[in-house]
Structure formats: structure tokens, C-alpha cells
Length: 364
Image 1 (tube, rainbow, N blue to C red):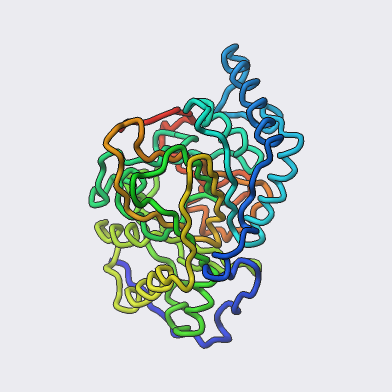
Image 2 (cartoon, rainbow, N blue to C red):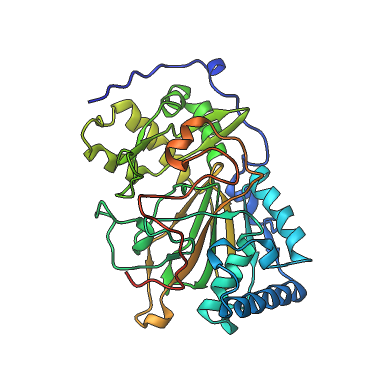
């Protein structure tokens, strides 16, 4: 088994405390609306017009939906606004909530096309699983988090705070749960600052590499886990990558050492801070809401939920993984998970034989 030697750094040997817009506290944002973008009737009409035209082109087989770009989905008014919102996601607060698209009058296919079209104005589409899905479906498929091959978004369980394997993740709510399923965001920058003040020695532990389970989605010739520090300091920027359950489940592989007591302390403090209502922000995504989150500075969580019994009323969110060409620099170690560190061409999950595809719904 591998062995890890942890140092106990002094404050001066750690990355500095970060005071930019990404270091926010949930209660400070709760009463504000500057993180909410309400679309105008004109902007919504623009989306609907572009979606209808794209559907016509799809019917003629004159365009491949897996490779659409902004020219295939023109948004002359909303497009520039989306680019400004992307800048806030990448270099500011780290997230935005866009309200409220009229999904009640759209078919599931129309909603998916609209989401894909808006998404390509923010970044390039990345595959989200071994099946090559560019359009993810976040819904309860009856899976269990105890299944080492299941992804938590396929269950109705709480997800816990984590990052996804891309620069920006987008969610589009088609239907909300009967009860629960709330979105919870927390700044990983703020977690770093708080840990640095309280336990700088534990910050040092999270600057060391740690193994994380790939949950069966392994690239050709790769290991069934990747090894990247939770906190990564690179070119004056702090980026985080985290999924506690998958860190723990990676211990099942030969050559992966059990977590040390010091690692457990560090991860426990990280989780304690992420779950602190003094740090995080809870919101309820309503049908028609889109949420875009910067994975390098924000962790997202979803509470457990109870669904409606009728299939047509069950909770259903669409998801995009996006690679903006204007994304931040990342250290080379991220290539182990992102495939590359080149902005606009990184992130996602690619295994042997995977091919980009778009499914308008999933049942298993």
C-alpha cells in the first residue's frame, strides 16, 4: 500500500487567505437578488425561436445536435448577457440562477434543445458518463449510493457537497420533487479560508494528493481512481475537487491506503464547514429555473427527496457539463481526471468506445 507523509505547514507556507468575490457566506446572499437573472419576455421569445429553427434543421438532418455551436442557436440579445453571466460564474461569485423559462408549455424535447442551445453560449459540451451522454438526466432511477457502480444523482438520496468533473455544471429543472431535493451551494474558497484560520495543519493535508473512486468509469489504460489534492493552488488561483463518498470508496482498490487519522480529521472539518448554515446557501429550483455553477470554487449538494408516485410528475432535472474557452488555468495534475488542462477542451468522462450522444430521457 502507498504511504503518505503529511507536513504541518506554517501559515506562511500555505496559499494566502482569499478575499475576492468567490469567498462568500450564504446568509449574506440570502436576502439579495444579484445572483438571480430573470429573463425578459423578449429573451424567452429569442430562445423559443432559436429552438424551433434548430428543431427544423434536425428534422432535415442538416445539423448534428452533439456538435452544435452558437451559430446553430443564435441569441442576438440574450447571448451577450449570457457571456456576462459566465464571467460572474468564472471570475466572480461562482454561480448564477436564471429564471424562469416556460417549461410548462414545452415538450421535454423542446426543453432539452433550449437548454443545449443556451449551454453552448457558455461553453463546449462534455460527456458526463461512460455512455457519452452530453445531456444528463438527474432523476431517481432506483439506484443506491451503496452500489460502487452507481452515481449518487441516480438516487433519491442526499448527494452531499461535491464537485463535478468539468469547469461549469448547469442544471435545468423540469419538475420538482414532492418534498425535498433542495439545492445547497457553498464556497470552497470560504471553506479554505475558515480551515486556514482554524487548522492550518489540516489545510496542508488537503494540499496533498488523495485518491477518489471513478465509480467504474475508467479511461483506457487508467486506474479505477484518480489522485488529485482537494485544494489546488496554481497561478494565484485556488481550485477544489471533492466527493467524500468517492474518496472513501476508493479505499476498496489494491494499492490505495486507508485514510489516515489526520486525513479523516481534515475531511471531517471540510464537511463540517460545508454543512454549516453560516456558510452555505440553500435554494429551491422551480420548474423553468437554470443554475450554473463553477466547480473550481463552489461545491453543490442536493437534499434527499420524496417523489410523486405518478411517473409524469417525478422530479427531473437536465444537466450539462461545460468547458468554457475562457476558463481558469488548472495544474497539470487535473489532467488525470479532466483528460486535459486546456481551457475549452477539458473535463467530462471518456472511456474506451464512448461516443458523444444525446438522449432526451433515461429510464435506467
